[in-house]
Every structure is written in structure tokens, then in C-alpha cells.
Length: 179
Image (cartoon, rainbow, N blue to C red; front, side, top):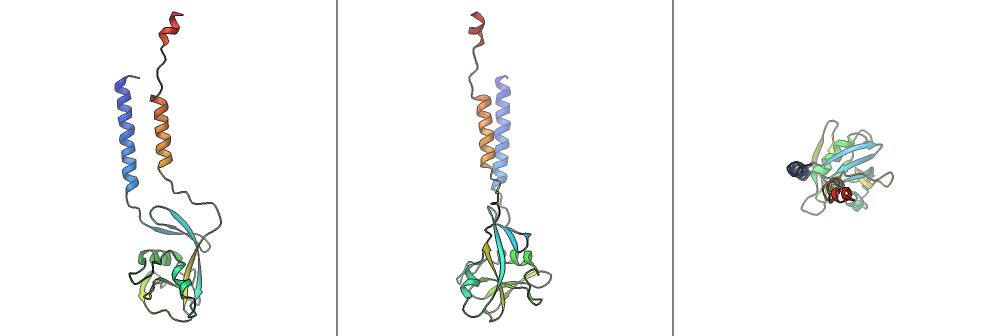
């Protein structure tokens, strides 16, 4: 292979790597997907975590269970994560409904929550109410871990192949021919 062909090939490979790396930096929106039963996969733009959703009836003493055991809770007066609460409420839909009423997805301690109303999830303000049903999430403990599809192994493999292709010294075949 001539030097100009090697240069062309290396330029092509590294420009392709640049495009791949640039596209990997792009912001990926969060998603929530049902993966069976009451287990949902939450992709936060970087990693995926599986959660088991269940419900808890607020009895006046279990507020911390409602508030802190959810990926959509950030707590405090500064607000929670309305986007994540809406994603979960929409994905769960009516699957967690009790008596035809979907549970509340409380996302901060100032009593903001999201509730699915039969066609979409709506953000609502209302103080925690006794005997109302709230959704809670726990990290799913079963099954194989999720694969994030990182580019690092792929780039490493490609660079290793390039090293093997171009990193070896050529053998001097003339010395063997004179012997």
C-alpha cells in the first residue's frame, strides 16, 4: 500500500471517528418504556435503570415513602422533576389505577404531582390527601443489567485494528533473498 493510500485511509477513518464522537455528544431525550408487568425502563439520556412501579395509599405517616423513593422526586421547595414524573405517568397510563383513578406521581414536597387522566398526564397542585393513592418506584432487582451501548469499546477496537494494520514494521525481504 502506498503512503498516499495509507494517508487517505487514515484521514477517512479519523474523520469518521470525529463524526461518530460528535453524534454521541448530542443530547438524547429521556424516555420511559414499559418492559412488562409493572417494570419500566427509564433512560435519562445516558444510562438506563429499570424500576418496578407500585402504589402506596397516603395515611399521614408515610410521606417519606411517597416522596423519596421515586426517580421523579428531587424534593425541596425548588421543585422536582416534572418531566420525569410526566414520562412515568404517561408510560404507566391506567395500569396502576385503583377504582378507575390513576395514582399521583408526586414530584416535590410543595404538593405538585402528575396524574394520568385517561388520555394524557397532567400536572396538578394539591396538598397530600389522606387515602389518596401515590405511585412509588423501586430499582428493579431481577434480570440482566442494561447495556448502554458506549462508544468506548468500539473506538478502542477500531484503534487496535489500525495499530495492527499500520504499526508493524515491514520485513526486509532482500536480506532473505541473498542467503
